[in-house]
Length: 253
Ligand code: AP5
Ligand code: MG
Image 1 (cartoon, rainbow, N blue to C red):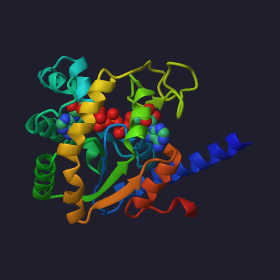
Image 2: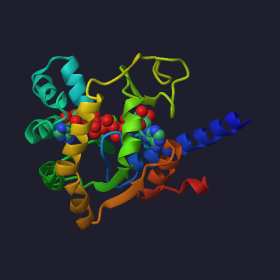
Image 3: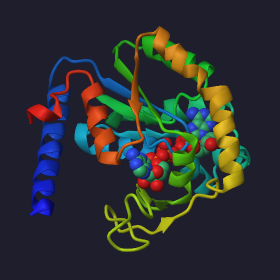
């Protein structure tokens, strides 16, 4: 019975999300850009995956784009690998060029969900300057996910990711229905090379020094909304939805 009720709620969420996306696409509203920020393992990928279903907007993760480039052994992939393996940020210019190439695709014309970009004040400045220079203005909301360090370590050590669609799972919090297989696309699940304790410690340190300053950067622009992410993914998702502009509150559905 609880399963059936859950399915009904989820179908309602998905249907309302799709109509929200169709409404945006057919109206004169500006494209919506949702920026998901937060330390490694805060849940950016998890929330972006759910938001993509809800809003019908593409999920653009610079980490996923780099991993795809590494798999395809492109020049960007070769440059990025050396940094990612050490838990360091890939240089700004490489990241910005890759990101802008991706968001120039037609699927981004009504907006997109950014996961893990921007990650430095320089990336943010360049991104917003370029957006402002474009004829079509966008509406931006920045959601900062956070959880304490012990929770982040617990999440990272139990994480598995789909090779096919990049959907994240967790061995305790959100296991797949069949071990090692993605519920969404049937792809194999794997552990990321940079999810070792040593690299994770470095990623957290890099986050504090290079990415955390973006919190005050976006606060001063009036764009930042704080989303505590210590609760379950579903509860965090409800907070995410409530923080979006022009979105009917879930409670009203
Ligand atoms: P990237 O791939 O973006 O990694 P990250 O920022 O370290 O973040 P993660 O992907 O590890 O965590 P997440 O927040 O997505 O959490 P998830 O949802 O998976 O970047 C990798 C590397 O690429 C960087 O280190 C850098 O080198 C390079 N890079 C990328 N972007 C760059 C940029 N802009 N500039 C320069 N370099 C860049 O969740 C984690 C786990 O927790 C999962 O198992 C999940 O199931 C579970 N979980 C999630 N939410 C909850 C919850 N509420 N309760 C319980 N469990 C939860
Ligand atoms: Mg991620």
